Structures are given as structure tokens and as C-alpha cells.
Amino acid sequence: MMASLSSLASGPGLDGLTLEPAHLRPELLNACADLINQEWPRSRASRLHSLGQSSDSFPLCLALLGPPPTPGALPTVLGHSRLSRVAAHDHSLLVETVVVARALRGQGFGRRLMEATEAFAKARGFRRLHLTTHDKQHFYAHLGYKLGEPVQGVAFSSPLSAAILQAFSQSASPSEPKAPPPRRKTSGTPPPSAPPPRPNMPPAPPPPPPLPAPLLSPPALSPTGPPWQSLEETPYRDIRGRPIFWMTKEI
Image (cartoon, rainbow, N blue to C red; front, side):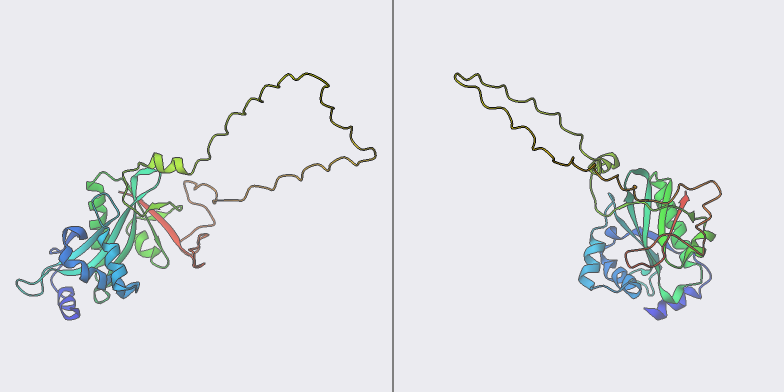
């Protein structure tokens, strides 16, 4: 496979490439899994299961395909990207798992993969893409992506709208207080009243002042971008503590 990739990279151009949903080409899922596992190793079964979740309802896996190395052979899988819906943003998608075969990097295939992914999303009515990167922020900046804020990707297929998903995170409204039960009239001696408070008891201490609310997110972006965020520095970290750049683009 590496020989065929090298010969394709030295060809006259990139005009013969296509981008197709992975779930429409199940015969290419093994090749997609091998390509992704070169960059992010996982068990083959787990990777194939993830690719098998691709659907038109999202998340949706896309394969960048080159011409078959020989007549009658399968197309060559050159790259991969994944699109997921974004919670509370009906017209946005999150681009994930962007990878190009190592033998083809630095030769324009990454740009072609992203341009085709953007065209695919735009043709389906989406207007904005989000993505994250640890070290390719300059590459994405050359493609028109700008630094942005974190968004929540929806990693499962569901007919639930963003409004319904957002409703799950809202606190329930307080219930109305119940009316006290009516007192029953009883004959005979009335019940004794509550005993008076014990003398010389110090008053209860006042409650402590409330703690300040934590800063859950950085200040809103200004038109020129916040001073604390650049292509060299980011305030965001992933779950392992590594710097992560959030980027976005209008398409």
C-alpha cells in the first residue's frame, strides 16, 4: 500500500480524488481503520465499531479516496475526517479524526481533505465548522480557521434537537410548597404548647457568606481576539493537561 501511495503522490495532480461517506463504502472500513490507527492506535475491533457508527444522521465518517492502484482493485484510502453535530448549534459541525497517510503529508492532501470536508458540510446546509488541534493550528489558520471557544460535540446519532439536549442541562423549576394539612378538632384538654426556650442560650451563628462563583469559561471573544489566546498560547487543556487549540471557520 505504501508503494501505491508514493506513486500517487508523485503523480501530476490531485484532481482524481473523491470524498465519500464511509458507511456507503463498507468494503473500505478496514483500510480506514488501518489509516487512523497509524496515528491513534486502538484495537482493531474498537476502531471498526466506531467507524460502523457512521450515518447520514451524524456522526459521519468521510474517506478521501484515490484511484485504484491497479485495474479492478479497490480505491486507495488516503485520508479520513469525521463530522459530529454540535449541541445547541443547529448549523455547526465538529470536525474530528482528521488524518492523511504519512507518505502523503506535506504534498497538499491535507488541504484537499479539509476543502472537501467543508464542501460536504456546506452542501448539507451547515454554516460553521469547529475543530481542535494540539500542534497543527498554523496549518488550519492557513485554511481560514480562527481561534475560538470550546463547543460540545454530540457523539451519538439521535433525533433529539439541540433545544431538547440543552433542556437536559437546565435545573428543574422549584415545586410549589404544599399546603399544611388541616388541624383536627379534638375534645378535652388542648395539647400543651411548645416549651419556652432555655435561658442563657447563645443565638445561632449566622450562615457563612456564599462562595464566589467559579469562572467556568474565559471572557467572551472580542472582535480582534482576546489577548490571552494566540496561535502560540492557549488557555485550554485536554483531559491529559495538554494544550489544545479550539478553532472555527464560517463556510
